[in-house]
Length: 91
Ligand SMILES: [Zn+2]
Image 1: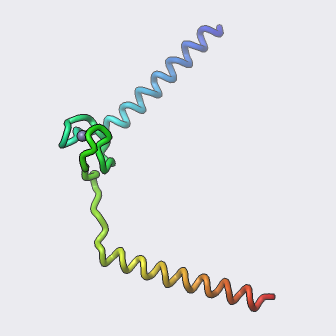
Image 2: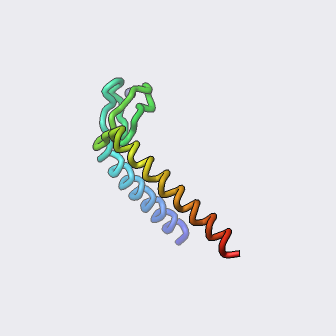
Image 3: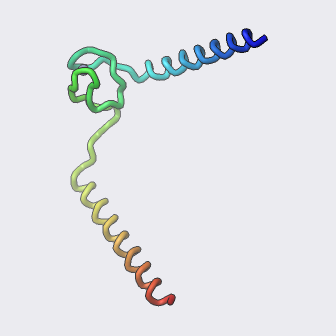
């Protein structure tokens, strides 16, 4: 009885590992520098250290980055001022 459940557990683990491998293999592609298999989201090859371009990745435009940063600073400042005013006036 115990032996049978141990076998079932091993079979389930093996099936899970096979599903995991299948999921990873969908995202595997050869490194353009060394040819070893790497994942498509990696920015650097773990084997040769070569730079990789992740699939579907485009670096953000500098102007857009500046705009987002400016808006975040403005919103952060307003929130900080409101919190400070609330602390001062709600005493
Ligand atoms: Zn490589």
